[in-house]
Image (cartoon, rainbow, N blue to C red; front, side, top):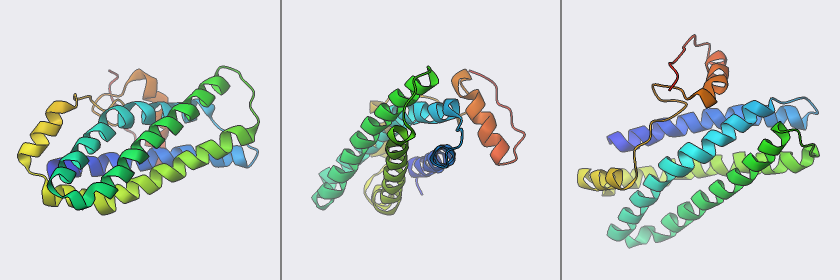
Length: 190
C-alpha cells in the first residue's frame, strides 16, 4: 500500500469513528433522549472542515489523474466527485441546523433526525465505495510523481483532531473518543 493510500485508509478509520459518535447521539435523539448537541456539532464541524477541504480535494485530483490514464474509470470518478459534493452540501446544512440548536433554537426532532441519519448513511456508503474501488485503482495506476503533483496542488493541513496537536475546538470531542477507547491520552493544544 502506498504512503498516500495508507494515510487515506487511516483517515477513513477516523471518519468512521466520528460517524459512530454522531450516530450514537442521533440514536439518543431518536429514542426521545437528550443528545449532546455540542458533541454532534463538533463532529459535523470537523467533517465539514477537514475532510471536505483537504481529504476530498486530494481524492478528486487522484481520480482525475486515474481517468486520464484509464478512461474506463470515468463513471466511478463522476460518482465519487458527485458524492463529495453531496456530502459537503448535506454536512453544511446539518452543521447549520446544529449551530442553531446549540444557540438555543428549538427544532422538532424529526427535522434533525432524517438529515443526520442520511448524512451518516451516505458518508459510510461513500467510504466503502472508495475503499473497494478507488483505493485499488490508486495503487495500480498512480506513481510517485503523481502523488507529488497531487500533494503540491492541495495545501497541507495538520489534522486538527487526530493529528499530533488537538485544536481547542475539538478537545471535548477528543476526550470523548479517548474515553470510548479507554485511552488516557492527552494531546497538546494547538
